[in-house]
Image 1 (cartoon, helix red, strand yellow):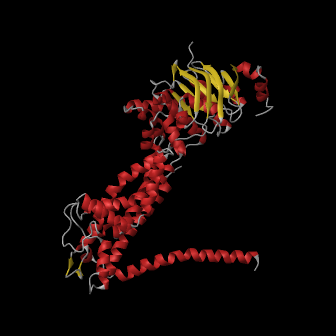
Image 2 (tube, rainbow over the protein chains, first blue to last red):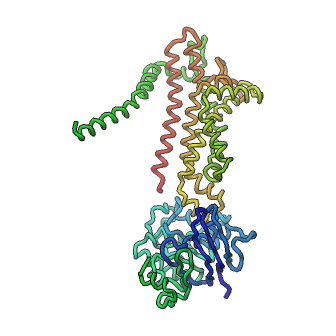
Image 3 (spheres, rainbow over the protein chains, first blue to last red):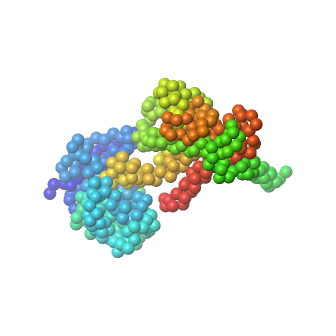
Length: 252
Length: 281
């Protein structure tokens, strides 16, 4: 099967000279949960932001290498970056609903894409909330403020907001960082359902979480991709000494 | 003196000085209100001046000031807001931006009489608008811009960065983001700056001196090319230029002007607090 996303020899240096990514190469297959784990400041978030070109918002950085999505160079001239961000959608570490109602959050992406049909919008709202396992909790108060939701609900709303754009790939940047264990397990269960329809690239909260949700995993350290492997092999029999040290808690 | 005593003394002193700030405000406002309130009645507000302005009302001056204030808003609002959006969202740190910022700082520092003379040269004479509401509104509008641009830029910058990132991550363009996420949340701040700028413009004398203000016109303006009376200039005129002017009319006029500017200021404060209370981030 052709790769959903293919990353080849990617280097990325911030304007201040910080070499965030060094020679990163790997493929992400359709409908897999690919987990990028490693200590803080190893380049995971930087890599995620590159995949849907949110990195465009950072000025003065130097990018080399190539990233393709469905075989197309995402930095190519013909690529509409706004469509790209709808196809490869990001959920941030801190739940950030936009000020406004739950419904307004969910219709924002489709509306900005030019979808005006009320029925389509309504259907996107319901469908995305159901997929994010939030529908039953909020269906009676879609017009109340999204800011009044609990932390776990907010994060599932942000997930639903991404899903409402009907993306192909979902980027999850440590989506359970601020959540209690119960909310975390709800989000993790939701991911298991979503893998059937979407390709998921996730930065996990911990090695344990990485092991729980991953189909395949990549270990990142100091801007380098140390090792990529099937989850089972990665977490039970890592090939690289540094991976093993990190997984077994010798550093990190 | 022990440290505790020094501490207590310092607090007392600082409090006293802070309270001192109130004193001139209270004195000015209450003095004008007490001296002018007796003059204010329906006739004073709605009648034309009579008998060399020593009798009758001040309606043309009130209407003139309101019209000028509106004109000022129409002139300065769009330009100021667009400039603020440019500076807050689009401007890169380069020579052009620094030049624009320097221009704004300098605009804010120009004495109002210089604006008046500039308005005379540029709008009344060169542009050929004559002494008119148009020339006056343009002059006041330019004078108001720096204040409005600065407060609007501040309000736009105060909208949390994460809303911009989230919006663009959802496929919105930069302009859609500004239009749908940034401006709605910055609007109250922009409005506050706008109203404060206008309340200052409403009270200014020097900029309208040569550009629009009439010593005495017995009619209301018909078009933007007409002259008009205006409260601050009228107050100046009746206090210094007209012999035998009753004090009551002077204080009455001062009170009306004060009420207009005070209302605008309170309105601005009101907008700000009510929105702060509603905001949930």
